Image (cartoon, rainbow, N blue to C red; front, side, top):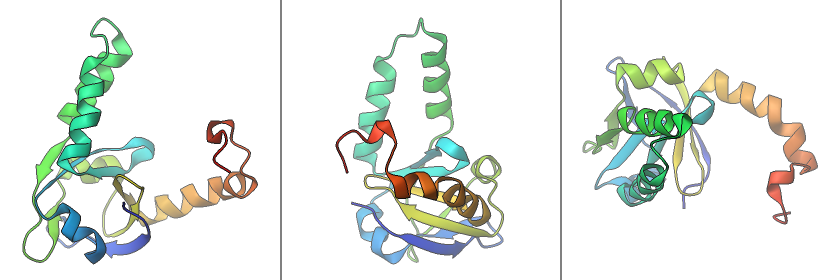
Length: 143
């Protein structure tokens, strides 16, 4: 399980050092893909395979399903961290997520998200009151 918030910086080569507490789980490799809300999402190979299988099972007749399948698969890169726990984010991934230097890495249970730090602050500010109230019908009986 991935949890926590970690402030990081990309180096001049676009490398991100993964938080130490996540490295062991991802030492054998990971898949980095375009996430929702303009972040990057990092999955273990097993978790990504589950998602890809569900996406591939969607009807190719449905235009939105085709778009999602294409974007998911074309926007994903396999990576293995180097000896210092770094991965190199592609120019396309950095552009999509608006990453330049300061970034925030968050655990999101079965995945990791990489955000531009300012975008993450904005997202939190926009949604913290709703979270505090716990009034989202999508939460069902969680709270």
